[in-house]
Length: 252
Image (cartoon, rainbow, N blue to C red; front, side, top):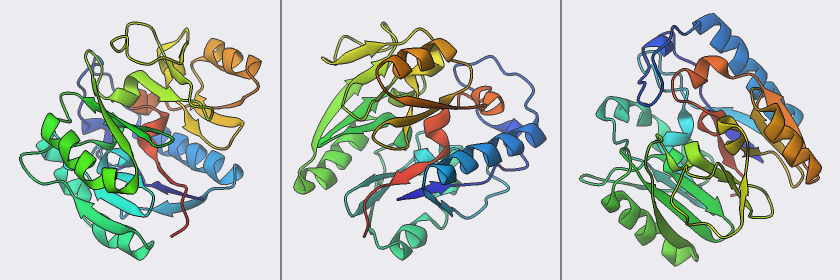
């Protein structure tokens, strides 16, 4: 099990803010929080792989948006925010070096990894301001031969699909009512916005932001160990725990 991450840029405070009110970002604190995030991944048994540092890319730490990984295939994204496309530098060689086949998303398609939620063989793709219909079609073209069922989900009022919903290991979708259209059948509503953001560390362990204790209690009652991590500085930039890593579950 490997987790792909990228260190915060010294220019992190200049990152794009779309849905939050812009607030001052403490870059030194963000670095400490990132270190703690990586430590939790390692503590849970994940081997951490660092993507090349990109000091001139303020949003580069949100590495999830750069790629979608399914089976032995890594699909390099094409960010809808043009200023983020430089973040793809070195990613093809990195994934190839890890043993993945690599495909790309080309214009006019746009695709952010944060808009892609994989639940078993179902791959939900959020149609958002960052991912368009052509991006979803390209992902379907690439993943369908691998047995994936690619399903489009309209996204409104949040940055990405995974800003609104993620999933538990048993496939239950976790989110807040009203954050996406009535779409998912097995849905668990959580009381806090950040409670919808989960990184699956194992079959019974999830990583989540430290500012959603009631959601953590709800998951604990369902038998999951909720591991809290403070990511307040990244949340100021519309970030969440899923944005900071790409989990590579398949050995290739």
